[in-house]
Length: 141
Image (cartoon, rainbow, N blue to C red; front, side):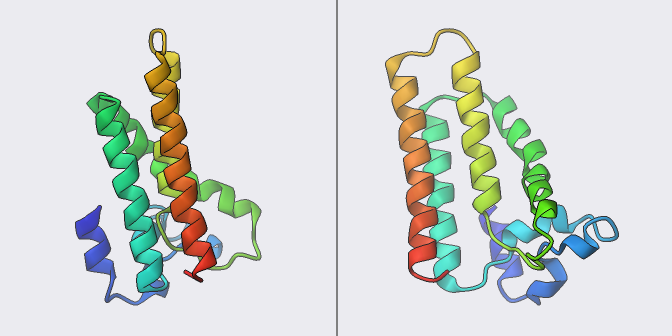
């Protein structure tokens, strides 16, 4: 993820960002939009969120299959954007991070009997994700 973000940092954003009008004709945008950031602050906020999701996934001892589920959910995060045709361009990790939180929460609450620590880790995970998203919005991406 970090390497991909670096590769797209100098690229023309409109070549890689999410554009609903091009979603079917240029399907790579379903993945590459996550690597497009509109400012350094936007990038830093998203990478902070990524670190929180990774750390808590590791602390919760999620199995490798959760990473596979996250990768599969990744392009689906853009699907909801088709309901917002006025949003002609989108970039960033927000949707991907939310997918990671959803996969982690689903895994922890559907396998076995969750312990209190599991609930706490998901709450902290969601709080970290919301904090990174809020910081990004408040500081203007």
